[in-house]
Structures are given as structure tokens and as C-alpha cells.
Image (tube, helix red, strand yellow):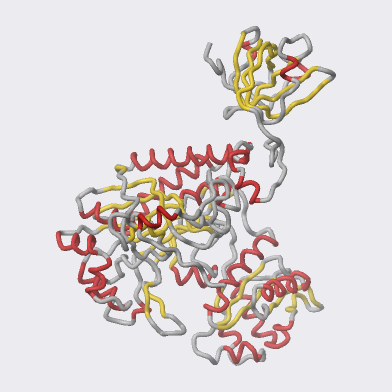
Length: 592
């Protein structure tokens, strides 16, 4: 017999009754029923009930067992009494009578319990992550992650892609976040960087003549943590294609992502139609470039109904350049209590509040109520109702000013309204492509122009488009949103040096600066670069959605905490003096 097990803890059935077996695993739970000890023995595969009574030679040792001791047992498979069958587990029809037991690993008093659904502080869970990972939910999440990665990899091969690996130690490049720098021992004073993404390398792979590349790529960014983002590293499905248009990329990646979601949706609906929404429309309708289309609410510009109206606050706002009034329609939100609650929500988010109108039954039929309705009069109120397609029992909320000042809060309010009124459809994955991103943005304080997204994207209209107003230039840049999260980002790349130099010059980079920062790419583009484009899908975020988790740390094996610390391994740690001397570095302590 094998030294540790003849079967896993999920394999034994009634067909094995009477057999002598060997199992190894952890003591999941112990129950004492009148001197008979029942133990749920757990391994990665499942649970088997084993038992011992005073007639067993192992009884004295079994009595000493505690939760999470790792043990090996030899015993005989017996059928459970019909009244004691557990249909919830594969081994529920049998139990194993222990004849012999060996303790493989004792466990001290546990800082967190593996059995049950108790909640523990995140600090405790991360410090003892190996115990946390023994729990059913996290075991299922990590298995799901492994299966998702395998599924994505298979689908990419089926699409004609080949997997290639790119360097982990490279040069620093601007990807929109801070680099993790690595000091060089052989070149004192110089630093490598961990790649924020394989962006430049995958473009060079296309220049090298490889037509379709992908990899499951680790990426490293020194970022502030969020619930949907790791503060240090993450994994993405990275891909690039030559001789393609934006639509080609969409048509290629959709069956990969959609097929993966359909396989692991666990009964939830996966949308097959992925609309393409311009960045400008996404901001107007949803207040975000990653809209949740499960919520049917679309915001609208209602500025004309308030221009010159009796509501002086909005009327005066609209006299200023670049301002507008937007409405959030709320079907079923027509009560003063709900409207006041949403107004308080806006104030909590830092705005003065949200104006509102709601429609109810009046003496002469449907009437509009609320402070705004009284100020702008029945004609304007009725025009707003008709534009928004609302009726009795409905409401509308209004925000005004420069969109950049209220858009984010409006988008959050739209989500809250959809949730509270039951408008947001659950058990569904709704996708959309957000396209036509602006290439540039202006700093409101300095007036300087800079890239708003990926600087290596091809501007729509090429070189000619860059001769006009930079803020009107759109890029072949695109994101895929699902249920309010960005899960894919990509672009058609700028493969022409004349266009690249011009694009960077608008953002204040000279040709010499571009050559100095990106010598490999600039030189490569002098030797026949093909048109190419691609994208990257965030694996951690995809698994988070499929696992129905709100925090990305629930689907990462060994995540950092909110302060980018590894409590289990003690990272980051202080280097030794010997290490610093070898690297010719000195740590300057922060002044108190």
C-alpha cells in the first residue's frame, strides 16, 4: 500500500465497503457521540467520515487529536446506516473504522478556525494565509482561478495564437503607474524595473514577424490598493496581433472571454451581444468609462429645460461655459422619502445635493412634486418627464455644473438608485466595449497637455488628425467593461515613427527624449513595422466576478494587505548592510 494513502478523501463509495484503506488529511471536525469519536477527515479533494470506538487499538491516540492535526489512518470501509447517509458529499454513504493512526503533523492552538464560516480580521487572515486557504470558499476560489487560466490558455491556442514569454527584469517605461525599481549590482547607480505590462516587448514580437502572441503575464505596478486592484502585482491574459483593425481584435477576443464566462458562470446569464459605446456617451449616460449595463438607467442632458428657468441655481450655472444639467431617471423612485435619501447620499459624496422631481397621483391626475417642479413650472416639468420617458410613481434626480466635477458622483448615484429600486439585474454578466477614447487631456491647473491613456496608441486619422486641437483627437483605444469593472484594455498601436514623434511632441516630449526613453521600439520601427494591435484581460478581476467576490484579495493565493505588506512573509523588509554595500546604496531615513 502507498505510504500515505490508497484513496483521496473524496473517492470512497459503497462499492468499497469491506476494503482496507489508507487515508491522509487534516482533522476537520471531531464529534464525541457517547464514547464513539467521529472525525471529518479532509484533504484537497473532499471529506470522509472516520470513526473510532474503545475497541480500536488506535482509540487512545485518536482521543488526543485536535482540529487541523495532519494524520494518516488505516481502516475498514463500512456502510452507513440509511438514516445517517449524507447526500451532500460524495462519500456520504460510507465511513471508515480506524484500526491504526499516525500523526503526521501536530497543530498548535489555531489563530483562526478552518471549520465553519466565522469572519476574521483581514490582518489575521493574511498573516496566517495558509490556514485561511484551507477553508472551503478559498479552496473553491483558487481552483476556479486555476481552471479559468487553463481555459483561457486553451481558447487562445484554438484561435491560432502561440504563447511566448517576455522578460521580468527590464527598463522603466511609462504605463500610467509607478515602477518597482531593482538596483543593479553590476552597474552601480543604475536600476532595472519590473514590467508594468509586456507592452513594448509584445510590440517588438510583432515587428519580429510573429503574427499572434499571447501569454499569461505577471505585471508589477506600485499602486494604491483598491478592492478591485492589487497594490503590487497582478496577472493578465496579454495578446497582440499583426495586420489587424480594431474590430478584428474585438472579434478575436470576444469568443475567448465569452466562452470562459459561459463555462464558469454557474447558471448566470452571459450576454452574447457586446455593444460599442463611445467614451463620450459612456460618460454622459453612465458617469463612468466602465458602465454596469445590468442597470438600465441612462442619464440624459436636460440643460435646455433649465436655461432661463425659475430655478436660479441651475439657470446661473448654465450661463458659464462648459456647464450642463444632467438627469438620472429613476423608475419607481417617486416618493419623497426615497428622493430625500438620495439627496443625502449626494451630500455625503461631497456635492451640495441633488435636485429632484417625482410624479404622483394628484387631484387632476398625475402631478409633479418637489422643489424643482415648483421653481420651473408645469410646462418645463412635463417636457422633462416626456424626454426621460417617466410616469406616475417615477422620479428624476438632477446634477449641474462642469461634468468633470459631478460625473463620478452621478455615476455612483446611478448605481445606488438601480440597486435600491431593484432595477439592476442580478445573475447576469453584461459586457460592452468603450471606444473612441481621447488621446490627450489638459491639466486644469497648469494648462499642459498630456496623454490621457496609452501613449503608444494610433490616433484616429493618423498624422493629419494631430494637426488640429489635441483635445479633439481620438485614439484607437478601447476597454471592455463587465458589470461595472474594466476587465480588458487595449489599442491599435502606433507603428509609424512620424506619427509617434508628432504624438509625443504634443505631450511635450522631444524626438530625442522619445528615442532616449524607448530606444528598442524606436529603432525597431525603422525596419518595417507591421500594423498591429491587441489587448490585455485582467485575470484576477475576471475570477473575482466569476467567484462573485467583492474584493480581489479573495481570488489571489497570497495577496498583500491594504498597505502593500505581506504580513505572512514580512515583506517589505529591511536590507542588510552587506546587501546595501554590494549594491552601493544608502538608505536615507525620513526626517521626523
